[in-house]
Image 1 (tube, rainbow, N blue to C red):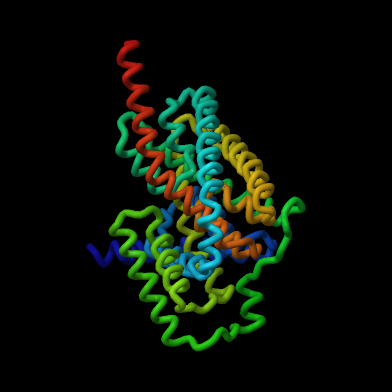
Image 2 (spheres, rainbow, N blue to C red; image 1 turned 45 degrees about the horizontal axis):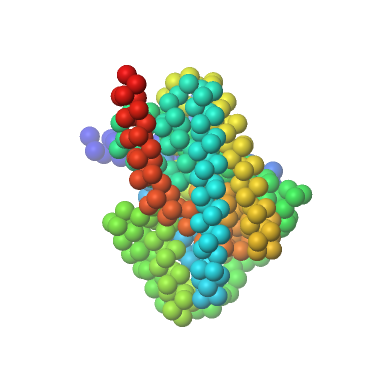
Length: 366
């Protein structure tokens, strides 16, 4: 029985892998931004709706991709970068609070228009970690988890699709990223001795990833390697820069998994919720651009850095984009990390208090 299950999973994964690879090649040939992330995600998302075989993408493949990205982000943290982040803490707090309040306002409007209760829409609209907000929704009574999941994933996918085209557009600094094909043509860059440095950092990243998971930190397979690599880097142990091919592979590992997250068939009032989710996602992107202009005014950074620092998407995707367009990676990651921790530690208690007050008012009025 176990052998049959394993064979079935292998077949499903092989089909998913081929679909994702075709998507990556198609997006690469169209010269879209980050094709090895967007291609697999779009292909798997669309194909899984029509193919009868249920698609399958093991979470450990996504986790491996996150560890690779986490290592690459961690390398950008130097002593100078850390000092810059500490100096920007007041603006991080201000802009994060403004972003959360902006999202709460959008959720109120969407709730009124859709007829879905405000706590559900609010939980689905807060730009925190996807898994964190879903787990939080499970802990609260009366929250529609399917709607929360859909809103979170729809926002994430919209931002992953639209922000790259904004970054590569005329209003932002337009720099060309690298692809796997470019790297193969140029050959592997020599960045110093491969061993034993690479072994040391592999051990650091893997150990820190599982330690972060045990401590129940947000996005542990990304955050753990970031912190571990950053500490090692600041301590004087310098890692090797990853080749574009490896970064493309890590994006591929993550993109295939994201494509399977959205399941519109499980959603009630599909047309209305999908329409409102798309509109609210666009408004969130416009709001993050507005907040990015404030950041641009304060610190005279590049437009791409300011937008990616405040875009309400996943930290891993924003970091990948920042790497591709040569934005200030430590600043982007610093702002994204701060928002992630703020939402992880501060927002759930505030939401619980808000929902408790709301439920008491309902009981009194009943």
